[in-house]
Every structure is written in structure tokens, then in C-alpha cells.
Length: 352
Image (cartoon, rainbow, N blue to C red; front, side):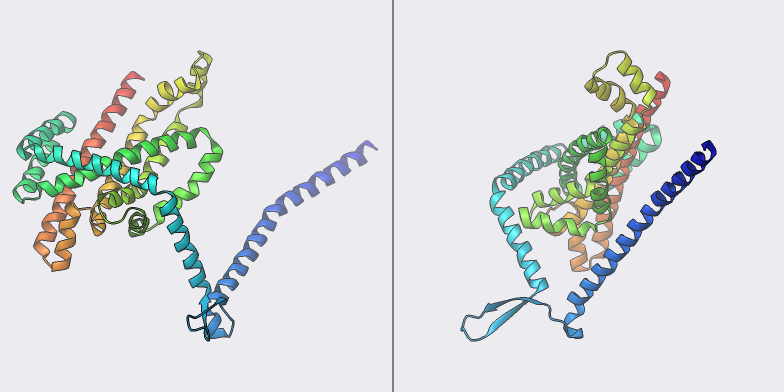
């Protein structure tokens, strides 16, 4: 009887494993069927008139009262989206207006401060900073690059670009650090944010200009808004990754000594994850510079405006000079932020 019982138990276990193994396959079949049905429905909506299928979903009487106007699925969907956008603009006018006023104020005064400083003085200051973090090579490149920008009469537009970047990067980094910490400490939040960030990073950069224009109109606030959306994913991802990479033994040791969750975060996890977080800030800054250049299409100004005007007037020389100024600015910022992150990482290694 004992042997029979053991055999029966083994059979039940194997059948249970079979059922559990077949469960993912059932999900695959369900997903495949849903994809086929969605493709069929999309085909009917897109090629319905050519295949003889009706795509009209509503009729509206015309102004003369005799004819009827047919509205397709696309017209109805687009109209619903337009109505939703109008409602958001009306209901959120206080929010959009406050953001626009605050961002415009910050950008304007940062730009005025940067333009008030003589460009040779700024050049000398950045050269000394470059020598402090990167020694002679970085100092020589920074000096020559800033001399090029100054003598090509691109300094004011460069300062406009820097002012836009400072505001956009400050907001993007604050959002990125907050959401990155939330994602690292909450698995559900991480699962929700991951597909959203995937979509944001695969979206073409020009797409972000559309909501910026819709909610803020033309101008610098729209460009800063598009830049924030485009540049924030690296800060979120790398902050999340850096905190998750902190060893669990270190966290448990801090907890054993009576540290609170806030103390563990601020005194253990964030300091140890700082090199990875700095890499995220570096990537956010580079993406912000790229997007600020494209944002000249919505009248954000800066060096992108020089490139845009050169393209419209087919002035290859002016476009090349403005493009080189953008490249030099990107290299200077990238080298400075990388040097700071490298110095922090070396300091942590020496302490460890």
C-alpha cells in the first residue's frame, strides 16, 4: 500500500507539473488570438471602404437640413482627443500658467546673469575648473572651444542654450531622482514605470514638441517642457539601478545598527550609488542639450535657432559654425560631469 501511495503521489505531482507548464502556453495562445483580432479590426477600419465594409460611426445633419455628413472612426477619435485637450487646457490653466511663469522667470534671469558676465572671465573660470578636474588636456580643449564660441559671435546664443539647459536639467534631475528612489524601493512602482520609460526613450524627439505647443504655445517654456520629458528617463533608470546595486549586506548592517529607512537611504544607499546616479545626470544633461537644440522649432532660441535659420536660408557656413559650437559645448559639459563622477568613485574606493 505504501508503494501504491507513493506512485500515486508521483503521478499527481507530474500531472500538476504538466498543468503548470501548460499554463504559459495558454497565455501565449490567448495573446496570439488577441493580436490576430486586433489586426483584423484595424484592417477593417483602415481598408474597410476598399473592401466594402462601412467605417462610418455617426451621421450629423448638415446646415441646410437636407444632406447628412458622415464621420469616420478617425474623425470621431480625433474629435474626442481634441475635446479632451481643450478640457485639459481649460481645467489646468492655473497649473500650466504657473509653470510657464516660473520657468520663464528662472530662464530669463539665469540667461541675464550669464550674459552679464564677460565671456573672457567665464572662459578663464571654466578653464581653471577644467584643470582642477581634468588637468592640462581638458583645460586646453575648454579654452580653445570657448575662444571659438566667443570669436564667432555665438556667445549670447550659447548662454541662452545654457540657461535653457540649466532649468530643464534641474527639473528633470529632481523628478528623476525622486521617481528613481521610489522605483528602487517599490517593486510595483518600478513595474509601472518601466514600460512608460521604454516608450519615452523610443519615441522620436520631435513628438515631444506637440504637447509642449498644445499646452504652452510657442516660446521657451514649451521648449523646456519638451526637454524635461525627453531627458528625464536616464536619471530615473540609473538612480533606480544604482540604489538596487547597493549590497543587501550593507543595508542589513545599517539596519542592525538601528538606522531608520530614511537614514539608510540618505547615508548608505544614495552615497554608494552616487557614481551611477552621476552617470544618469550626465546622460540627462546630454539629452537635454540635444533636445534644446531641436526645441528651436518652437521658438525656444539658443544655438538651435542659428542652425534652424541656416537650414532655411541654405547657409552651410553659419550652420556648420553653430553646429561646432553645440558640439564643443556638449564635450565640455560631458567631460566635466564625468570627471566629477570619476573623482567621487575614486574617493569611495579609497574609503572602502
